[in-house]
Length: 618
Image (cartoon, rainbow, N blue to C red; front, side, top):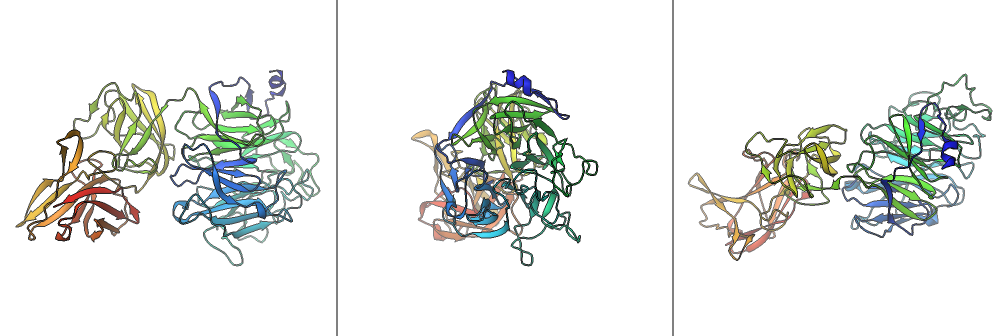
């Protein structure tokens, strides 16, 4: 352990502590990967992981899978090795609907940086089409310092991290040259083209409208921003910059600022700066968030992520990062860096899944790991109480169900309205994507299930759900919240089978209601459908389906229903006034369904098919 004390320097901004945390463990989730340099997610609700191989392939892993399959192969387009290869991958914020994603690689032949657009296959989302649209090409004078990370910011623009072009000490003074894209953080709009450009320029980029300076530039003066990320809660941009011979550092990068390279190496005045680079007295220092020295074998920072997951793996808001050469993994929080693990890995990258849990890539052993904490609470699974779709999101104001163990000391139900936020000592807290925590109204709390309503003010995006018993967190897990995530209730409370609906019969202007489901006499634990009588023809007969998550639909109503292969009109889709969180769909039936027996009922709203339910007709 002597090397830790030798290397422990207080470098202006953070103190070091070196006792490892034995509770933090590396769980292998993919092995046999060829030089992994990134692991990320598509943000499409599928919970898949995408692994970038420096040698040119993107691999995809299904949830709970143990092997990865090929998503896209770019090996013939690029040169790989050293600091070159396939270096970056970013999925469009609307990838779920437009299938677009973006890559950053060094081109075969001249080693130029290429940023280009692809799409996944329309028929198979686990494969990519090979059609490429090149957005941006940047010449590279040397083989190193290519940067390579790309990511979409909370503003919807694509950010591109560019190294200074290579060699050492930026001999061409490119990082300080605002007419050159190297040594910069760039920002472009991939949703439009502008003149001869294959992309648009965000109108508030710092050099837009000025005579000097490239319009693509977002920030100036970085050396080799190998890995960086946005805090999914605050939106701040954390950029880890690889130093020259003395320092490694992380800046929170803001628009239009100059972060000093090659004049400054972190907080160190660089006496080997190139001709043309400002003197340290002339270029104000922007202090890094954290910094460390090249001691005890440390040589190259690998930037990570601010932890916003739901599993209590790390402290909320802690920044997780590491060093490529030593394999050390660190947590920066409250102004202090704490050593979590001292591994033997060549730490090429960290990554994040849709729920905010953090992963790490071992370049030297071809393995991707999930970082876990043995003291984390038990994991819960949360679904829409209607559709029970484990991969779908849940809408604001909708009814959700969390499943686990030890969630309550007995069974408790809400006695009346308004709904309580505490049942028998059990509470549910939702921390939304903006970091705001709210107590959820509760319908039911039992040892293995809690039913609650998503607060109406919850921000869309990934939330964390915490179930507490007597103010102690007993289970937690991620939940994706959307404005519109519809589902229909079924009698079996499983998202499939006979619809938990009713029949409305209008005769001579008077409405009566009939059941369409009953307990199976042969097995009281099961439900069966009751045949709907469409006679006499003079009656108006309506199928009333109950659901949740329907309120965020567009106006006017864009909905259709298919029953037994035939289309029928929808009279109403919206909130059901008698029960909190419950929605209703009214469908006008006709005698064309007579004699059909039990058939599928498929409702489509705003282009989204709801879970299929069943109904029976005489």
